[in-house]
Image 1 (cartoon, rainbow, N blue to C red):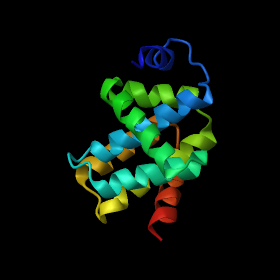
Image 2: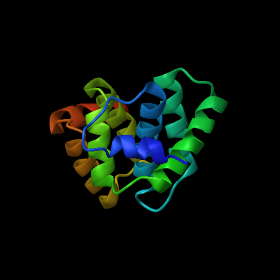
Image 3: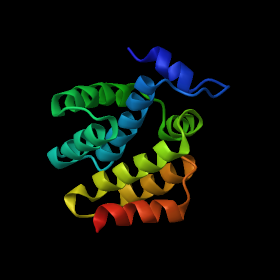
Image 4: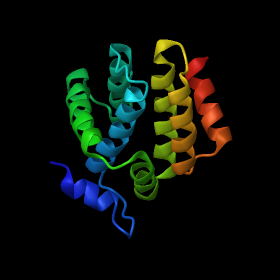
Length: 144
């Protein structure tokens, strides 16, 4: 279903993604973060929907529909390292910073940081080309 998008993301020569594809890729990474601890909780789903609504000026039903597509893409996406590196090459830095903030919001949705989530966040942030300081600042913005 998402074969063309995944081919573009993992091509040898990185390309900037059209907005619709970038939305899917970024949303799929949010889903991956939420699923990391094996508990894809309702509060995490709500945070993903809210992040999509705010980022892309969507209604709640539009965000839920986009999230469903992102869930399907996440199921088909390659391993996290290749997927995240592909997003880094295809998405502007400012959008990646906003993604990190949304990811922290999802990680913190249940009020605790699991070891699996922390580990994945450290790896993903680095692969996205976001500094530890930028990630820390993003985390503080969503927890204060």
